[in-house]
Length: 208
Image (cartoon, rainbow, N blue to C red; front, side, top):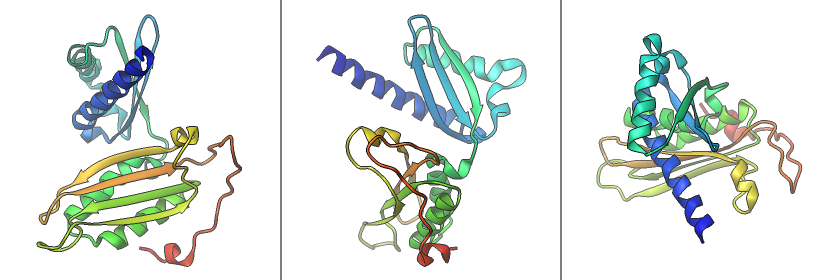
């Protein structure tokens, strides 16, 4: 029970740190965070599209973030590093944020999700799923859900841990929309099966 409680607490702390960094590093293109605890330090790696914005002049920005995390989340001796994302088109949070921004500009939800899925798969993903839930039509319409999916996305077991995922919220004028993006990265190895890259169907090839 103690171990289970500690696991839950660690997950909650990571969630809160992710929310803090997403807000603080929005202009740097924040994507995700990795946290590794050792007996001496807590290593925190923030993945962004523009590392220079995180470091700041003379390291002033990253020093301020380090002190914030230390005081806000009661983490002893945090050591923060910054890494540049390899391909932002395979980063769930960045894909979700792109969709959110486009919805706020009035883009058609169904066409947008198909286009985003096609782009993710064209960049080598073994599987991807995008779900938009909320007021997806004009003012007064009922909330509904649109889901697009292609390739392999495990839904149960330890394999779920190998799927990168993110959730963001879009705020178009007619109501909030929740967006969830799940991506299986190129080269991911699953213990229970071999995953081959699949050709895109015509419905996705033609999505723009």
